[in-house]
Image 1 (spheres, rainbow, N blue to C red):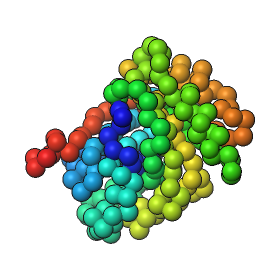
Image 2 (cartoon, rainbow, N blue to C red):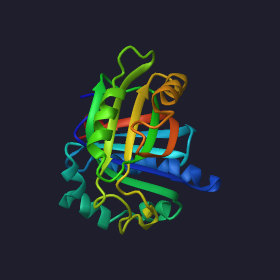
Image 3 (tube, rainbow, N blue to C red):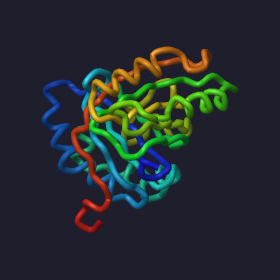
Length: 224
């Protein structure tokens, strides 16, 4: 499986331009390392939008989805650092998704990421998953490394005490990830494979293309 683990936390947000320097310092100097250090967290990746909204995107891979409801993670959510409290107050248009990785095809991860947000129809989840499994085969697509399906857990997704700004509809939405070598290859694949409905019954909420800024794995930590 090209993605580490079986669970994923996806967060995305905007901040005012005046607050971007501090957001960058916080993520780069504290927050990603703090999260990856939690038991069961495996790695984190940070992205910035080439085309899409919100501007900032973060993917945290975990051994299982249960890690994202574990005592260790809950304790961290309940006790944010002072810097975390300050920066999280800047968040706008916040998305917070706790998901299972149910399809992952290909080998490796790329420098560019395409993302499609889908709302599955009630009762049509199996049909949509089967159809997506076929479309998520990178095969011989030039510049596409791997593709994945994240299925959100509605009970675990959404706002927390630490991040009340993450409220909003669609806690059960699904996310398609397309890992590629560059934004052109990813954009082409989004247009050709996900430019129209997959089954005719799901709702496409949004699409975007993001560039990888940096990543951090457990083995990168001083005690990893």
